[in-house]
Image (cartoon, rainbow, N blue to C red; front, side, top):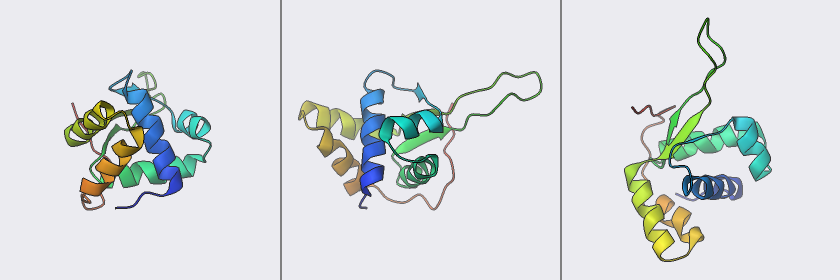
Length: 116
């Protein structure tokens, strides 16, 4: 699968953050600001990366009753992590998203992947 320019930009941002925070929490607004794209573009890119089997996402929520708000939480699938590590060994971040997308297969339009 081929990524758009903005999807590559967002994935590169996620890879950079992942190197210091394996399970990272960011709002859609923070991701959009950091990558110079709109919130809607981040939402579309997230959906595509989830469908490709690259990204895992626990959706956040605002305050619910007495429960505090929770941020969106992201990480990569085990296969994606292996590809990122391989690319890091090669010292080539661009290879990261190329490896991820070359082996990616759609998961049937899944909206979100929840994990423990």
